[in-house]
Image (cartoon, rainbow, N blue to C red; front, top):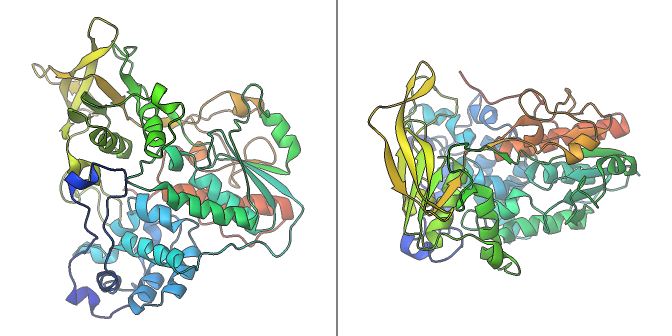
Length: 490
């Protein structure tokens, strides 16, 4: 194990400092300062190497956390990255974007702050890239079988890399003009600079994975779903759950009321310098009162983006009550608790308002939004009821709907393959990730519903094992989860 007395000597979490707010809101770079190696190793030494490491249960990837904590504490970085890559294709992504359910399940977290697992993970992979240890792993021989992966988010890319390394010829199709899915244009630069994604894609390309951006399978004038199935021995659908939840209240049709991704995608393109047509289409927050409806990660991404664009004010609304500062009694260890969290974007500015519901968007007389009306709500018998006399109006020239996603987009590809959405609004599949169409598999949010990035990668890895077995009759690829697995709750 790591330092046998580390958790007794060092009882506090030590995380890298964030760059000063007045400095970082002037650019799009990542917010964190470099982390001191001595501090990192001290944190890794707090790991207790538990007899039953519940952090394994918190992470669907089954990451070998005590092992690479011990190796990091010892300074055995080369061995640490080998153990990290054994279960996770993209630790540089999860180390930046995952909310770390492993830390909520850390045994040390029962009576101390948990080990900074996520930061150790990120530091290990960054040291590996800096040292040139992350190299292509092409297969020794090809199987002669072909696989199409539709969608290049974390699930699709994980499936593609696993299947390529198993010897299959894999092509990844992406409707956007660059590979990465929501990792490319849905995640702001201040959370993950896209050079992080590009270096991993370079490794995948050198391994043999073929990328086909700018191709929307099933769209008019493009390859149809049926044609794709006929061309390849197997197809993996990793199209995500991109259908946004809407808010059908009076005034929804007004200009300036946008879905979050319709705002973030052009903003992220502009931050990347992809300004050819973006500036003509982009809605910016400069000088505006911005209201974000939805209190999750997408809402926080909108908040940080609006502040960097120079918004006059930003207010984030959430229908749920304000979470508690500490783990609630009905969400015991080792579950992932709903507690009050302050992201880097929240630290930068804006106001958060809880337990409110929007009732109307206000027209300025020119079919543009100038405000919204809301009312405070309270939970009564499981339903949100308005609090009498609590109605008020907020100024808003830009309203962003960040209320989550309900499932994959219907029609098109799914319709052409004869696939239907189940009662949860996702693509139905069996215990081997296969849909009702033989040889067509589904991975990630398209089959699971909106979830965390670690679940997407785990789905991609497990789906790849199922595809490999379908093509060869057996597989040596790991399958960390089943399609029916869910996070631990009570």
